[in-house]
Image (cartoon, rainbow, N blue to C red; front, side, top):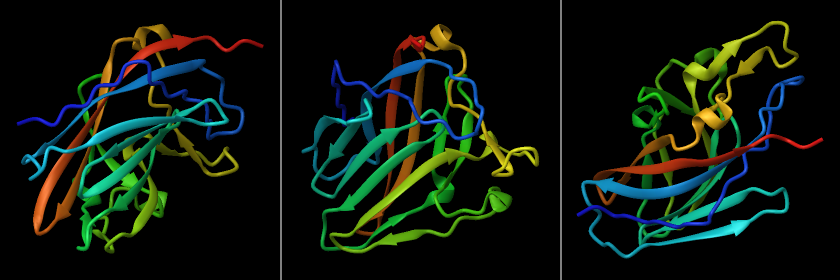
Length: 200
């Protein structure tokens, strides 16, 4: 049975910009629509909460008896904090994580600490110790481009560009977690609810 969570009125403002001189594209409002695991987790008990941040963004917290994940999005990446709530080691298989974008394309993801020059290389599985916590982010590898004219040497594409044209579109992040020797593919689905031009 599918694990579904729905929360209306919860928003994420996409405010962070990576490249110096990047044109502002306005502010997107995004809702965490639901989450599911394949195979189904042994318990259906879970919760979802939100917490408004001083910078105007919203953090989404998904929790079940095995782990807690706190999502915080920017316009280029999916930031998160993952807490292992069990007495066993949890393993994160980054190479099997994926992003389904608004065009229906499945994209490879990399996480924090990966050298951008090696963004297409195999990523090692990360163990998360019992009751441990990990702060990280997921970023589509195909959105990263070498740019010698940029002081960082890299240009990172925005997740969304079409402004009002993106409203109603859906994207999802799939994150494989091995818990008690079982690999669960957790899929988190987000919906673009609104876009507003920046006021100056």
